[in-house]
Length: 405
Image (cartoon, rainbow, N blue to C red; front, side):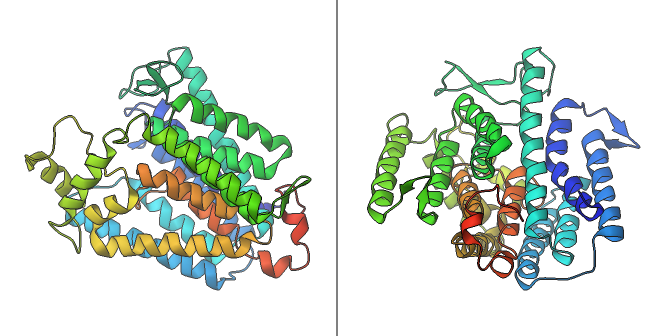
């Protein structure tokens, strides 16, 4: 490993370290007045910046990366300003997102460096999930918010009344992480196949239907982008048949258990109605909470912290302006991912689609913070850089993650 690669290692560790320390460390564990997760995350980012400055090479912006950074930073700035105007406050972790984006955009990584960044991120994410689960089984109190066992009561779970959470805040978040780990492990192959096992465990024990749909969607994308898998030739007829069977199975899984999708359809309607109160700029987080509390038509007992849909949530929270920026971000990443998917880097399209599907039934992305879903979306985009320029004649070698770059 070169010194110029080390800053990608530190950036890849940022989000997993934050997740783990936020679950393990108590709020009263402080370093110079800051929560442990905030202090150590910024320490990692400072190390990344040092290696970026000293050994990161010269500044060489790429047009696509610059446009991506412009979208992300515009969305971050607008959301932060909108939320601040509504009385919301942010901790110092909010400022890691623009710093990371600026570092990556000014000195964009090569395909090999993106793979290194992704390897560190996904392996660390799997590690904190497993370590957190072991700690939960020995009754280590991971958080005051949940019981020490870190299982949640649910109506649909392979373990009866319990669903797995590990170090993540909800079962849907644990399941979403599982879908990303499974897809990346399958793409990378070799030793990284172990990530598929961890991802599968997260999906099954969290009993998240949304993450199951995300994993299936990612695999369907892979199938449509590849000419064959092993010795099996993927003709159009085969792709259509497999897609149809998978879609039917997914509909049965989702709709036969609970047609309201665990009250999500009611929440979607309520959030759409709330969005009409301030359609252009949105209500902001505090405004939404007040609107929910003061609206007598919203049934009690329905969790209304967010819309359980990234687009409806953005519309109600940050308005049409914010929603347009969110749409531009997703559309740009998906277009770039599918454009380069034909070169064999299908993982970008698969991860981008998986993030999108996970966000259709829940909201894990806060556009101010660098959480794991946002980081996965960034990694999906980074994989699209350089591919067609560097490997115009080597597409066959890029069909798996084991290629030499």
